[in-house]
Length: 85
Image (cartoon, rainbow, N blue to C red; front, side):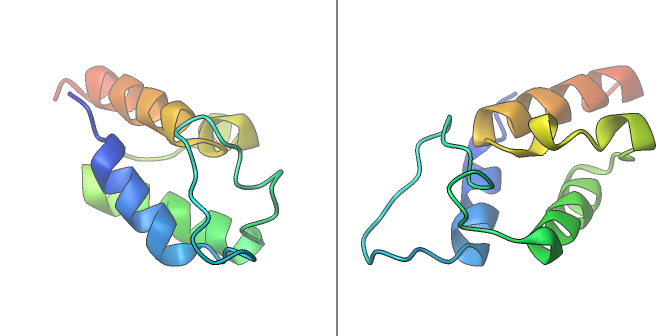
């Protein structure tokens, strides 16, 4: 299943663009682009756990898994598959 739309909506509501009208592609790294901060990272982990009913473990807390919409999609899909959903 594809969860990108839900992930996009959360990210777009919680990032700060320095240029009005700027958009992100699903492969843009919003951390490297400095659109987000560490507080956003904690909120993103909480959003993913609550929205998809999965547990993010210490092993999952690699910034790579949370840095783009496509990486998040892969993480959520993998965790749901492990959970049997």
